[in-house]
Image (cartoon, rainbow, N blue to C red):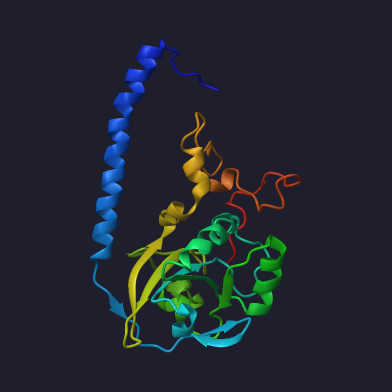
Length: 250
């Protein structure tokens, strides 16, 4: 490991004090972007999406519960998935603690995947997660949210994700979609986050970014697939030997 310059206490103090200016700039920028996000235009949802849940079929409006705001995490778990997405699972490990507080602040949070509920629940039980996980298998929800793609879309390259249309090979991609329900019961899509936008929901990264070694994502994929494993597989998991990032389910 490279070791940084070692200095006197006074030099250390002055260097860190100067760096704090940059940290504060980042905090203020984050606050400004969050304010701008809240001012973005909304899109009215006009379809009656129906989801399969442990309590039976529910519409999108039902997922709000008593709250007016709904956060949906799109988990990469398509029908017949056998290789569970380690990146989505890593993010999902952070949900339950946050959810303890969100539900008391007018926010409901659910995880949605396209696989049938009978395929989702055993994995949820294995991982010990408590959040609500529902299936969009019988609806167009994932396709309309542009996180799932049909065979035709894959073949023609008509795949729009994160506001960019280009050829893709994966039928399932991750993301977060945020909705608001007004006093009339109308539902609006207010914000969506895709690709690396999900990092904001992963508290482990915040800890790692404070350490000398940082995220240590040094290859072969130069991302979380370099080191993240399902949380019950760290002891006996062997490094992937193929050329593709492990754990992404198509």
